[in-house]
Length: 482
Picture (cartoon, rainbow, N blue to C red):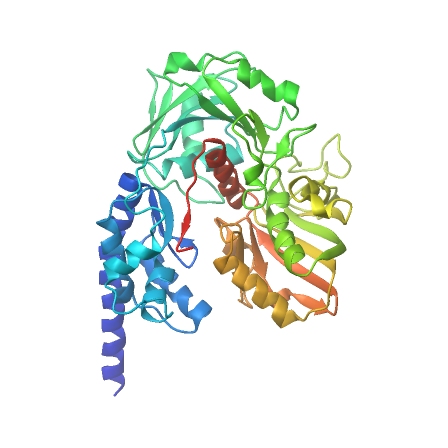
């Protein structure tokens, strides 16, 4: 009896592997040729392995209480691959589950008829958006992750084209070191692909992308057009310039048209948290900020809570991974406490994230306080939000609301949700969400709630930055099914 059971289990696994292997090339081709990104219940399958495809299908059971087999979703992917459509993020899991189990079928529709109805916003629609050049000014932690994100979307239908990076230096061996840091990352692992150095053209080649390396000491010293770059969005991830005067220097360079700062801005520059206030970006906005990693992590969850329950006031404590601004060993630092060894100490420091929320979500102005503790981990942080709500609720209702928000709302790209009792920070390295609600840690007492929100302060934030770049470029990519 045991042998029969083992054989059945193995056959089931082999079937899943076979369908995942069939799906892989379709997923890649759809993105490269049509700009269509395939997901399963919010998890992107772009550049995923066969095991990734199998694992994402297991998520369906967690959300719906019913499994979705790969043989049930594959026909939908195959049909989508044969359709003409404009760029979109299409959730294969939701489509297939809705067809088979969700009561979305009307009469005896075929798979093709069902898809035409569910994807009506993009099926047969022309793709008339012109590609946009992107330049990364600075090539540190965020710059290199943005490069990875832009390169992984290579293809003739790619609308954001990484054309150059701008750095200081230019000494012997500089190109090799820049390429090596892109190729190998102690936190995020190896680059998925091939990287070579072109000394003659002072460039890095990554998966077919020619990345010009430009050396400059000031944003206004460059003529991008001499490299064939024009109308470019400059992503400044140096943190050196934060006001309009400083960031405006970029616009004095020929070929640059807009600037995005990957840090909180000063003055009247718009601080954007995609998913919350990205519609505030106007075509005439030349300088925009993507706020901070912590602001991006907490604002979507705070918006969701405020929309449903109201927030009277609250406090946000950030337990944050140490950053490059701290010292590895005790040494002088102009800021309080940050001179002490980051890998050996918890360090209390300040954060402006709680106040910065009001720039993206004005209704919370003056209602939040905040502080931060830097801890000896290199990546993934947590925000603990102690909130006084506008009405009473309970733990189950609050968690269920946040689960539904993460799955089926306009914030589905920003908020993730976990029910695991075993998850720890390292499990969330590489998360593409702004924040992940840890539902098992939620505390509710009447109108008081304490929420624990994890976030990959490097990769998750970089994904949010890239979404703002898309906004600035006028790339409207719908999430379907609606």
